[in-house]
Image (tube, rainbow, N blue to C red):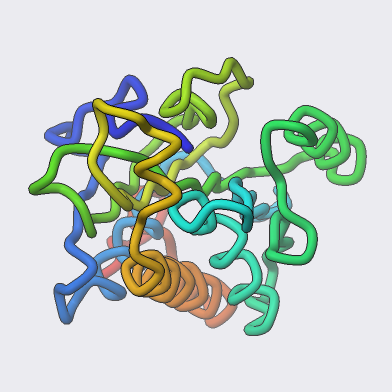
Length: 207
């Protein structure tokens, strides 16, 4: 569980915020993810989706639920860490990061986590360049992780965060997970089909 801002500003040109009820949410996530990958990712790197959270808390289950959905779809060229059966959370996050670096010499990590934010932001997804800070929303000190972050805003911050997470609606978490999963999957398909990341200096802009 990370904080909404995580050190990043949603008005930054490299950060996209999309409402999960937007009928074009998946397309917007895919296009922006291709843009971000084009700026920093090279095809020699192993694309990793690291889904952080625990199934013991409804609000914090966004990561592992997304991971399980992605595993079922088996997006081409992507390795998924963090599922409902094998969650990545505060206890094993450092170990998992070390395992990723050991197994994949050149990993490129897309980190997915739930976060708390303002009332008007609940149900939105933030996608941007840079690492996220897992655990910050509940005052845990965990390492920054990821070259790209995806945060799903599941509830309101500022008061009794653990209680808020436990009382988050599963329907909202499920919808956020579905949109994030489809966005990542469509991105993987676009890359496999030869879609050129729009941020690349030597490629055409993705449309």
